[in-house]
Amino acid sequence: MLLPTTLCLAAAGAVINFWLGQRIGQLRHKLKVSVGDGGHELLARRMRAQLNFAENVPVVLILIGLIELAGKGGVWLAPVGALFMVGRVLHGFGMDGGSLQWGRMVGTLTAFLAAIGLAVVAVLIALGKI
Image 1: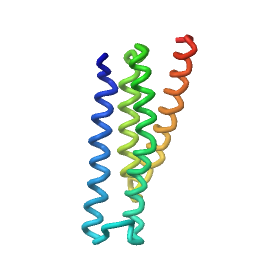
Image 2: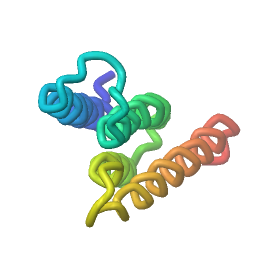
Image 3: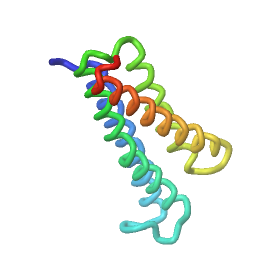
């Protein structure tokens, strides 16, 4: 069975993860730090942003995939996934601090809400309630 929503969101996740990694790589080159953060706060923040991405995205993608596989995704699932991914980008920018620092909070909030909301839907599907 083809899971178009999950496939598109996984592709978006791959692109965002690449972007987060590129930001780290560019800063590593500029600061001449090949391993660790070298005591540079911005590098540590960018590394943490990518790790946060790696911590949150798999769980959400699995939930989206299983909900879609169960045939319960409907028209709401793709927008929820898209908002989650936008939140991950905002979180990445927000971790830099500065004028987009609010992005960290928005990204964190969208990640929590998406994960909890999708988990509730998954349990309701498993119980045959929806």
